Length: 288
Image (tube, rainbow, N blue to C red):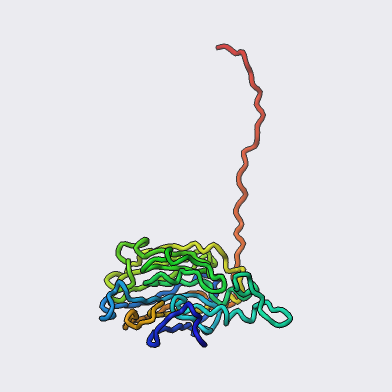
C-alpha cells in the first residue's frame, strides 16, 4: 500500500509498530507500563543531533494487532482511510460521502480505531500536525522540537509541548544511558501520569499529568486492552542523512488487572448530625 502524499520518507527509512499480545488488561482498572530506551547522542555522523529526525510512541489499544500503521509524522497511527473504510457512509452508486473539504463522512463507531491513548516523543514535533480526514492538530508554526504529544481515542490533542517545559534535565530525546519512562493510566481513563528516571537513580520524577477528560466506561471491549509501541525515523524527509542509525528498547513491563469482571462496591456514609432549631424569645428593656 502506498503512503499518502503527506508522508515523505526515503527508501532507507526505519519504522515499526508492535503490540504486546501476551497479556490483555481491563482498562476499568489502572494500567501501569514502562520501558527503557537509549538514543545515543552521537547517532548519525552525517547529521548533528539538532537536525536528525526520530520519533517513538507508546499507546493503549483494544486491537490485538496493528492494521496498516503509518510511519513518518503519524508514528504508527492506524491509517483512517484503511481502518474506517468499513464505517464510511455510502450513496446508492456506491460512493463514499464527502464533506466540502473532501473528507470522508465517517460513523462515530469507526473513529476509535482501537486506540485509547497515545503518547509520542518526537524530535520534530510533527506528530501534532493536522492530518488527513479532518484529523485534529496544529499548524507547522505551533509544533515544537523535542516535543511530547498526547492524543486521545478520537485523536484530539491532549498535550503538545517541548520536553523542556516539564523538566530541566530531560529536554531532548537523546540519552547515552538507558532512560526509563513510566505511564500510569488511572481513574478509568480520566488521567495519565508520565514519569521518568535516569540510569543513575531508582527514583521516578513526575514529568507531567495529562487530564484526558473522559472515562473509558463509554467505550467497548475494555477488558481486552493491550499496550503497544511504535518507532519511526526520519519523520518527514527525503534523505536518509536525517535518520537516526541506532535506537535501543528493553524491559517493556506492564501491570494491571487481567480479567473481564468489574468489581463495584457501594459506599454508604453515615447520616450527618443535625442541630435542631430552638425557638427563642427576645426580651428587651431589662436593666441590671
